[in-house]
Amino acid sequence: MEVGEPDFEPPAAAIEAAAAALRDGPTEYTSSRGKQSLRDAISDYYDRRYGVDVPAERIIVTPGSSPALLLTMLSIVDPGEEVVLTDPYYACYPNFVRQAGGTISTVPLDPDAGFAPDVDEFRSAITRDTAAALVNSPSNPTGAVMSGDSLEAIAERARRTDTRLVSDEVYHGLTYDDDEHSVLEYTEDAIVLDGVSKRYGMTGWRLGWMVAPPDLVETLNRLAQNIVICAPNHVQDGAEAALRMGDDWLDGIKETYRERRDFLVDAADDLGLSMDYTPGGAYYLLLDVSHLPGDAFEVADVFLEDAGVAMTPGPDFGEGAEDTLRASYATSTSDLEEAVSRLDELLSQTAI
Ligand SMILES: Cc1ncc(COP(=O)(O)O)c(C=O)c1O
Image (cartoon, rainbow, N blue to C red; front, side, top):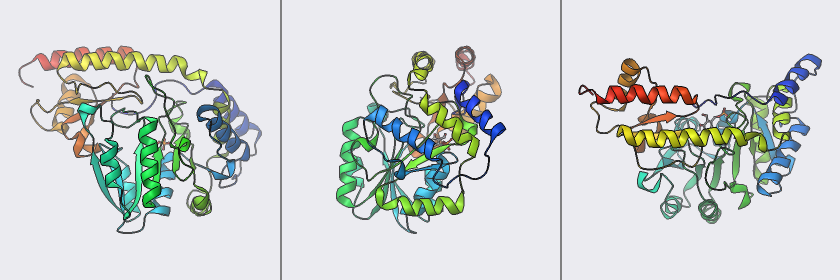
């Protein structure tokens, strides 16, 4: 229950397309922006899912969304400049910001609000001195999903203060209650990062993309050209096949995740580890371990050593997750059941 890797197979159509491309070629470098046919498929995806027109010229394909995050920070943050994040945050964000010489300023999230950002607080953290603000919905590590209104209000604040807005939408498609919204519905000035890793179970394929605002496309492409050259040729064909399948493919998987989430939320309650919230997306749940002996790293060690249950220590995700563990339910239902039963036994002993 530690890593955030989907436990389902990639779509057969993606495997077929990538295998055929490897077999039949061509396998040389592609354009650094990505193959035209893949960028067209991504553009169609935004039209189909969100009703927004994203011309292929604004899409740059990268080997996963992680390099896209780095390229983004390198292009919009100068040394000493500040980037606003929510806390808890995805563990790698501060590292990308630091790599560009920037600093982070965090807006704490409230578990009682289900870790949804307080929009007024987030907006007031964005000033004329802010280089960029980064949002991530559905979120890693909380699983919280932001409403369209929140995204719109933040986009408006970013526009007024001349701040670059970055939206990490890599968990889009994996929401279980409400509709999800892309920030692109409200602005074309945001930089949006996404990819096939989480939605299609294709983490190791390494395929992501960024949607760039018109004024940043050339800069980002120049950086991409120099630093990553291009995403793997055959993988681009596999990703295109996945994107062309339509969105029904995910229905069964989403249902499974929803059932696991509900199971885990109830189990957390029974185990006395609940933070009293139900995440709306991704496949993570933060658990409260503040009442157990030791810090979160020590509790994680005890869970692992004594129960054989692996979870990620919350402090990796910022001060706001200090006394928590992140449980991932991207693991089989039977393993989740086994883990809960082992933790139940462990926690009923007086030693912990
Ligand atoms: C919030 C978030 N963004 C980005 C990534 C990176 O994904 P990838 O580089 O596989 O596209 C991850 C991976 O766990 C993530 O959780």
